[in-house]
Length: 296
Image (cartoon, rainbow, N blue to C red; front, side):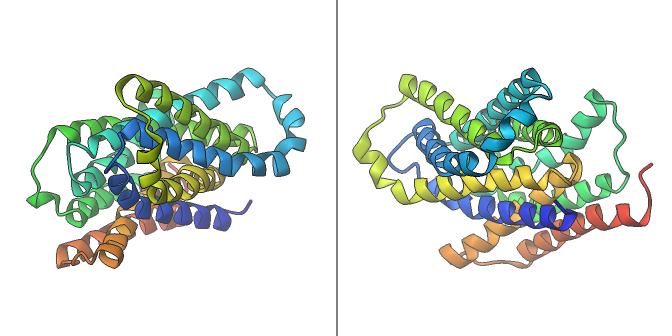
């Protein structure tokens, strides 16, 4: 798969994630966060699994000959990271607003290269760091965070960002070893669905009529975001290393802002536009500077 296809996959999945923020927020009007995630990711699993059987079943044996134990371990870590990241983000939306959640979520952008540097002892191209700074400045302006009140939910979002970062790192590791993006996507969504159902069964009520009231939000967040967007992420990371990938994924905030302007008639101020500009500059720098100077 070419680098261009990977970049397009990253941009498309980021666009879907950005437009899903609205569905995640409105989808909890009648149900709890774990109920929402359980149904959302199970719908995503149902959408992906037939495609995995159709396109990847013949590759199972050859791919698993490499190391089944490593595949199972990384699949579990990816699913666990996705569950914890999405659960903390979803719960946090009960205690903070979308602007705060969007800003603190992109803290995974600096977390990814820091974790790689500290734990994997791997050098990071110097272009990543100015790109990270630009993305954080952009997120600050984009979400109007300077005019926001810090809330309890913000701490949950920051903790969730840590698990989003490990999800990106583990995804980069597994797709380099096993070319089974649909299978990996199906497994991680099933892990999230089962884990959310277990926690939701303890602390929430699964009432079918209430779930049906949120069916539009669940289908959008499930099929497109929970299902296909995360598969696109896996495709993207086959040719994009985790740190630059995290920077590209920060465009989620830009797309979320555009979606809010288009769907909710929210006004875009000069700071919002500047925020979009800074994030775009950060993404472009992360992709163009390595072409000018080799990794140091």
